[in-house]
Structures are given as structure tokens and as C-alpha cells.
Length: 315
Image 1 (cartoon, rainbow, N blue to C red):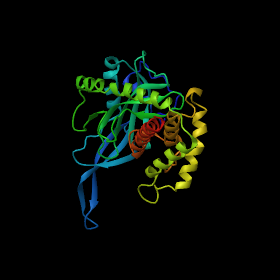
Image 2 (cartoon, rainbow, N blue to C red; image 1 turned 135 degrees about the vertical axis):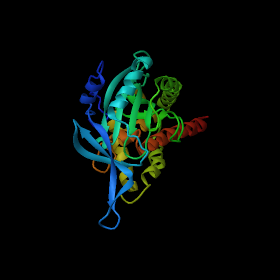
Image 3 (cartoon, rainbow, N blue to C red; image 1 turned 135 degrees about the horizontal axis):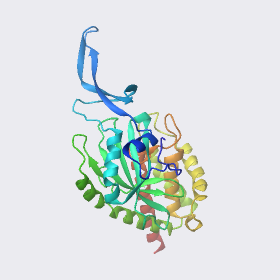
Image 4 (cartoon, rainbow, N blue to C red; image 1 turned 90 degrees about the vertical axis):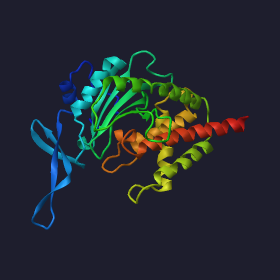
């Protein structure tokens, strides 16, 4: 399983740490080994850096990444244990779990409770548990919204900054259940604010000219980086336009032609259709591990700006 964008979730309910790990292909551990280099071509010297290796049942499988000497890798089963320790306290149901980039990134996706869990527009309240062993990323738990019709997700971060709207745990510290519960519950209001914004966008209908303007404004997000990451303007515009009717076919008739449909279509493109090295499928990186997370939030705020502009013009 490589992506949380799969609505055919396995049944993880009531599973133990070992059972969940096996179902989610997380039944392995990360072993830290010192790196060695040859300074003069002959004499081995131990580096201050280490390499992180994947071992399953005591057997080496692959190298994951390198890390500093003080880095404490987060084991897959530790993330599962963190989830299970919060499951009853927060009223969670585990929907999905797995890893991406061949083990470098580990995640669990859980829904919150049974009541008032889904908005009128089909956005489900979820918590995303993630950790990365590719670089010095922290373990993070954040509120996200998962659209039941399209499968797209968006972090409930109300800021364009990357450090808000989540509970983050440094690799240097142990997980504290009480602290995590208090901090995560303090983030719950982000869902309601997001649902309110999406309701507003669903009631504002736009012309073809506004659709083109929205796509044009978002192109800057595809014109960053180096020659391998930048994309030509006409290609991006065509692909975004082609995605719109595909997204429309999955959404309720009442929101067709709205700003909500437009922004969800953009997220749909980022999650599933944007070309990526090695895969055309938008993995979990689209919400947590790369610039795609910021791109999706930029689209959300751009849609809110257009809504404000349209209200002024209609006044």
C-alpha cells in the first residue's frame, strides 16, 4: 500500500500493533549503522553520519537514508503504538496505514468519531499520523479533511506557514500521550473553520474566464525549482482544464460550476494526475512531505481571494 488516496481501506479496527504492522507492510525495523569512508584511498575512517537500514525478521532489505549521529529513527511500530495510545482517548478509527518511498515515509490515517464526522459537502474529519526517515523530519499528527467523493485530502492548516496546525514530536523526545491529546484537541477547531470556508465556496459560481484566471494564478507553483521540476505553461493549463470535468463527475450536482468544485479539481490534479518522478500517482507527499502540501493550500487561499473579489464586484 503506497497511498492513503485509496478508498478501499483495509479493516484495521481492533488490531494489535503486530497485526496492524503486518497488514500495512510495516512489520520491519530501522537499524542505524555507522558510515565509513576511505580518506586516503586505503585507511577507513568512521563518519559522524550514519545510514538507516531496513531490516525485516532480522534480515537486511534496503538502505533508507543517512542521518546525523544524534538522530533517533522512528520505528514503524512506534508510530502504531502512538496511534493506539490515542485511539480511545480521541475516539479514533484507523482507516489506512502504510509507507511511501520504499519505507522512507510512514503514515496512519484515522477518522475521528462517528457523530458529526462528515460535513454536508462530503469532507471527512481525519487525523494523519506521519513520520519521515528521509532527512531530519519530526513525527507529526495533524487534522486533515478527506473528501469521500474524490479522495483528495487537505491539511487543516490555516496558515501558509509549514509549522502551524499540527502536533509535532522531535526525534529526540519520547511520546507523551497526555500532552499529545491536549495539543491535538486544541487543533480541532480547524475542521469547522475549513468546513465553513468550503460551504462559502460552494455557493459562489464562476464563469469560464474565472476558471482560466484561477489556473493562471496557480501556474507559479509549477514554475519553481530546476529544469526537471518546472512544467510548461500550456501543458499545465491543458491538464488542469482536462481534470475539471473528471472531478465534476464525482461531485454533487449542486456544487457544479462553483469555486469549491474548482479548488477540489485542482487538489484532484495534485493528488492523482500531476506527473512525478517514478510515478504519476500523487502519494502521501501531496499532503505532508513536499511542496505539494503548500501548493494545495495556496489554491485554497487563491479561491478565497477570488470569492472576496467576486463579492465586491457583485455589490
